[in-house]
Amino acid sequence: MRAAVISKFKDQLEIKELSVPEVGNKDVLVKIQACGVCHTDLHACHGDWPVKPQLPLVPGHEGVGEIVSLGADVKHLKIGDRVGIPWLYSACGQCEYCLSGRETLCLEQQNCGYSVNGSFAQFCLADGDYVVKVPDGLSAIEAAPLFCAGVTSYKALKESGVKAGEWVAIYGVGGLGHLAIQYAKALGMKVIAVDTGTEKLALAKELGAAYTLDYQTQDCAQQIQQLVGGAHGVVCTAVSKEAFEASFHSLRRGATFVLVGLPAETISLPIFDTVLKGIKVVGSIVGTRQDLQECLAFAADGLIKAIVEVRSLEEINQIFTEMENAEITGRIVIEMN
Ligand code: NAD
Ligand code: ZN
Ligand code: ZN
Image: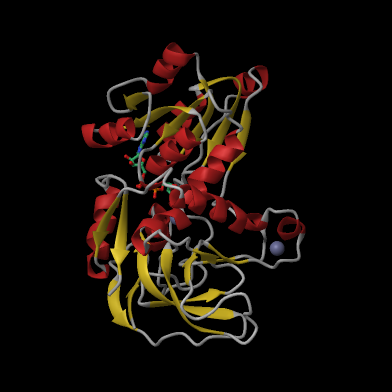
């Protein structure tokens, strides 16, 4: 099978011919039809984070396709089922986190396209218990970005505790952010979107943001304080320390700051303001299988729609360059042929 492989951090990926993985008892083999490209894939290929993936690696954790074979123990799926393989490739199913609906915190988890090979390939192995079915009526290309960008945005908004009619500020209108705006609107929230450039800000407006702010030319935190008295919640998806700092100063009293983007940096949190303003600071990591089903249902019901640009596997290095330069509007999805 053809696959995009990273063999050395910060190198180019190479398109290689690999053998199709063998199916174990609990596995399914998925013939990939489409896979979104997440900024996390770029972090993986750069070795940005403290826990690094083993190389060589096939990245990709928004793969969607058809099951072509399955292990003897997989009873709830069949050949021909359309499924997606999320970042949470598997978890132990037995620990306090798995047992309490917080499987994304499991210490034994495997991550698709990071600790195990992912979906930038014609076939991808998956754990039958952790794939999620794609609702009828959603194409593979439409569904792929929801398996990370969609579920992560949706979960982060839930974590924000922002209620219908309240203000949420979304920092970063990229793959995650453009979906976060739509989920926020669908949940009845009022949205302020922050990014830069006319194209991304116009998209944010089109998707329902009441206000759009340009971080390169405006003091966004000050604007958000002035416009609405501070946001009830902020979801920061930007890959930038400055965005996280501005996010904090965009909050009103009692608000929740949800950290989602993963720049390899640290921020300092003003203790006095956090305490006196009763600020809640929350990290949010992808979403559970249940969150995924909910987030897919919004799309199946026509309430949200990923804005995608379809490209080929051979273009992966070019796609990463565009991502690094923040030139992508919406999500790029690789169509596998
Ligand atoms: P992306 O490249 O598509 O989007 C990032 C956006 O941030 C770009 O539009 C960029 O212009 C914007 N940006 C940069 N600096 C900014 C600033 N100062 N203020 C506002 N916007 C700014 O990336 P993505 O795929 O949406 O991923 C975003 C981040 O989220 C990455 O770090 C990724 O690893 C992380 N991520 C986290 C989770 C999780 O579970 N927490 C899941 C998926 C991705
Ligand atoms: Zn567990
Ligand atoms: Zn991702």
